[in-house]
Amino acid sequence: MPRPVTSALAAPLAPFVDAVPRPSRLIAAEHDGRLTVRIRAGRHKFHRDLPASSIWGFEGLIPGPTIEAERGQAVTVEWRNELEGPFPVCDTVAPEATDPDGVPVQCVPGLSGGEPDRHSAGLTGNTVVHLHGALTPASYDGWAENIFAPGQTAVFHYPMDQRAALLWYHDHVMGITKFDVYAGLAGLWIVRDERERELDLPEGPPFEVPLLIQDRNFDTDERGRLTGRLVHKTDPEVMEAFPPFTVVNGKVWPVLDVQPATYRFRVLNGSNARTYRLVLVHEGEPALDRIAQVGTDHGLLRAPTPVPADGLVLASAERADLLVDFSDLDVGSELTLLNTARAPFDGATFPAVDAEKAADLEGLLPYPQVMRVRVVPGAAGRRSIPHELATDYDTPPADALSIAPRRMIALVEREVDDGPNMLTLRELGDAGDDHAGPLVTIRDGEQTTRYRSVAAHFEDTTTFFPMLGEYEVWQLINLTGDTHPIHLHLDPFQILSRRPIRYEIPEGAIGERDLAATVTLERDADDELEHAIDENERGLKDTIRVNPNEIVEIAVRFTAYSGRYMYHCHILEHEDRDMMRPFVTMAPELMPFMA
Ligand SMILES: [Cu+2]
Image (cartoon, rainbow, N blue to C red; front, side, top):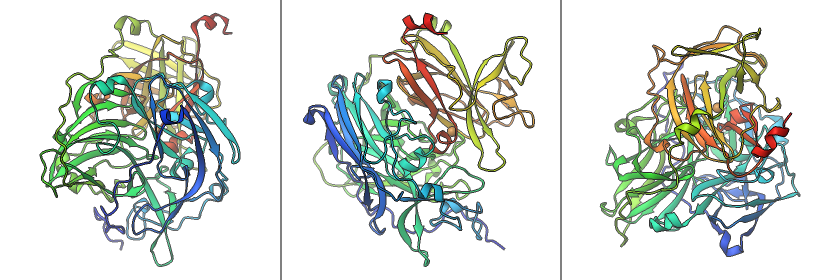
């Protein structure tokens, strides 16, 4: 008999022994705005007691150097691909979802009986770099098919004509982003501006701390010891990798020494698939009231905002700019940052007071630890937080929204006979009265609208042609069981609404291209989610969570550049398996010439 699944596993690595690394800084102004970044293989120690791992990294480092730029001062980066094989990650699909003890295989190290995938083993280092959150001309945005091979170089120009924010650069190659980012190809990029300096926010060390949070797994040898080799493992029931070890700036469960002072944490979830709900715990109690969130994906919020009562939720690619007050704490005080989010994440809540008991093997969360904070002697003190932060944006005007083009996108999961499910984005067009094929019918009160699926795959014809300068409303309908963080390239957007839906999909109605469904904008009887907009989501976002049984409306206005861009789910295993589509921004004067 398999023993019953327990909620916790003994950790094979000691937590809180490595210091949180400070990524090296590359300040663009010190190089006249011209940077060279080499993309290379390297060796990296993820933990004091782990052998060094082979990785691919920007400058051979995990994370890559943090590039710091000034608003309005363009940066040109020569991205030099000097990668060499073999691909440093072992990718495998375990034959069973649980081991003989009933423990989900994703919660444990090693291959769990899986064969190393030979296709990924043959990867030699094709890459393309995308600067996530940047307003970048299309030619430099890192189109997923415009790849540069080892030995080739891309010179990308970033105008930096945008407000201060934490961005990040990472690989974006079609079909293998999940592998290249997992191997280490990610780094932070901070844009700074005068408004942040007026507010006297901490800038640079020691009080500004970038925190790149990721999850990783490692191989084991024949005696069960961790070898350090990176493992990307999925299983027959879960097509995303949810590795057990949380890594902050490249170290498993590290510890950050802080002076009794206010710190600025610039947090990014750079995991492939895992969503975190971060709870800071001090002496067994949640200490979330120590945190004021001042910024989100595209920079400052209008006012400081408490994080949600259950904790700060960050899906893949979401960012948070936090001021955390440690000023009243005695030297020697310890706080722990914990994650309470099950995986795959579906929006379900978990009380912050129970954060220390959040371990949940079925929820692929064997170790809730993220990092520890330890107060050490220091002279600095508390920093007051300004009441007014951003003054440069407002909610989109109602009259502009009333005439804005509306785009409808359904998120669906399609079962495939000979492989893992496909996650796809279905762009929906008005079906008209005489359309004979499958229909998506959407009922909103008295109003019923009938749509047909007009695009299903990345290669299908482009159907979105936003006009520069004009607001659009994009409606994202989730017809799957999981939360999807949807990311638009180019300009940021604002969330307008998040509402519950119930839906029916007839048997076999999710086809290769077609889709039939009936969606009603009202709560399903079994639906326990709140479908509320968190206060910290009311800023300028570039990635938005769309929970199950939910329609999310966003308002976006593309402003700067014409060209072909992408939008996609930022769960990398979804993005790589068809949850990505193009759009083309157009100058208004060219619209009359479009066929
Ligand atoms: Cu997704």
